[in-house]
Length: 71
Image (cartoon, rainbow, N blue to C red; front, side, top):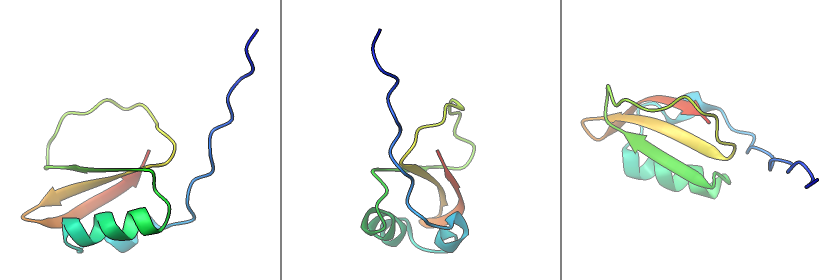
């Protein structure tokens, strides 16, 4: 039987610090802080609820981050 993979550690980061930033600035900051996947979504986008380690999500409205969550 194959070993169970160990997920990589999440960056020690607070999602709230991204709210109010432009989408471009938020993405650059997230990548510098170690996030491997950065996803920007318009408000109301339908997404699945699976958790993906190393991913940070931004809800972007009018070019600014209005909401941010991990996974």
